[in-house]
Length: 258
Image (cartoon, rainbow, N blue to C red; front, side, top):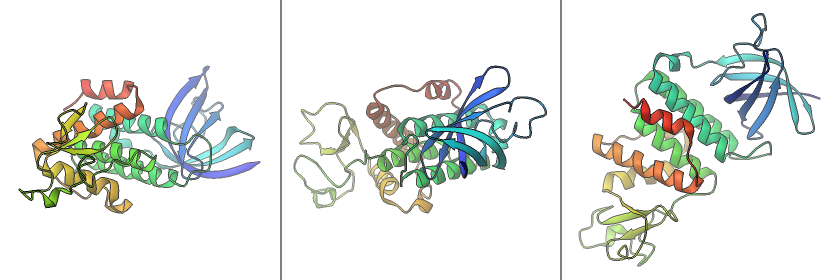
């Protein structure tokens, strides 16, 4: 049976001299594996549209849980990512974590938003007008939220007192984030809790925006330079703890960090 779908190639693996095995993030069935026979040959009409980080329109042969490429047309190759090793490394990392957390070849209502989020992130990286630290943190935390790991940022999980009702009345003052369970604790309730990281007011506001905003506004926030570093650290640590593993692309990204 022939099917058509649009998707972003988030992973590719060479199979022999001429073939590729593609991992494609789609909006309907999460991540699917596509066997692309002969696409590495110089005369293949699908050679460019089946490369890593290419967003393409695919026509596939589908048989049970197997997909074979019939043809592909490039929608966007995000060519400018190749102009910077840091940009390319960041894009590959975002693709790897999406592949790790997204549903594999099954109907998934969240896949469409994950796909749009990644495409928007790649556009922003190519444009160079958004700080990569903010793009990275937004994708990490929003991805976790969409896949069922949304943190509780409403108030202290211990005493349940919202930040605004505290004596100082400053959002985020003396609040800490638990990497273990995604909860917040105030200073008084944090004494015996493990793996906590402080949440300054601006960082907490950014995290609340990321988990609750409309999809089209995900990247529409700014922070000071120190707060960007802090947000990036919190979101990365939370993702790594949730995944309970490391990512090779993240290790590489760290080595080329600007």
